[in-house]
Length: 193
Image 1 (tube, rainbow, N blue to C red):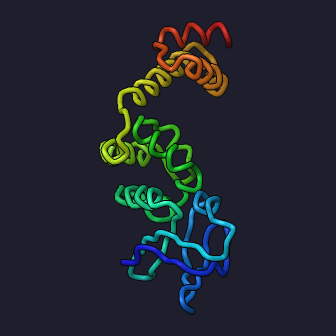
Image 2 (image 1 turned 90 degrees about the vertical axis):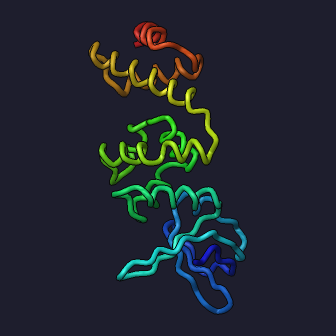
Image 3 (image 1 turned 180 degrees about the vertical axis):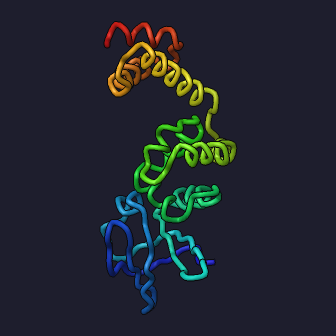
C-alpha cells in the first residue's frame, strides 16, 4: 500500500526513524543494516512495507529495495514475524542471509537470536528455491562448499576436536582451496589442529 516514503529525517535511532513528509511524521521501524546505510543528509527516501494487524499498523523501512524483498520473503515463512525478520536483517547482512539459505547453512541462520533449529530448517526449506531463482545463485558450488565443510567438521568433532577450533582451521583451508574434498579438508585440518 505504501511503497516508499520520502521526506525530512526528524528522528533517528538504530531501530526506528521518523520521517516528516509534508507535515506528517511517519514512524518507521528499521533494521541495523538500514541504519548503517542511512545517508548523512536530512532528506531521505526509504522503501517501505506496511504490516496491518488487528492491534497495530506498522511501517518497516529499508534503504535498499532488495532488503525489503528479502524481508517480505522471510515473512512468508511460518513462525517468522516482522520482529524476527527485522532481527535477522539486523544480525546478518542480507547477502549473508541469502547465501545461508541458498547453501542450506542451518548453523548461520540458527545463530540469530530467537531462531531455533526447526525454524532455521523451515526458513531454508521454504525459501531456498525462491532465493536461488530470484538472486540467480549458483546452487551447486554454494551447497557443495557447505556440505563439505559440515561433513569435515562433524568428522573432526567425532575425532574429539573442539568445533570452534576446527571451524577456524577448516574455514582457512576452504579459503585457500574452495574446491577441497572432505578427505583433503580433514587431512589438512588434522595437520593444523
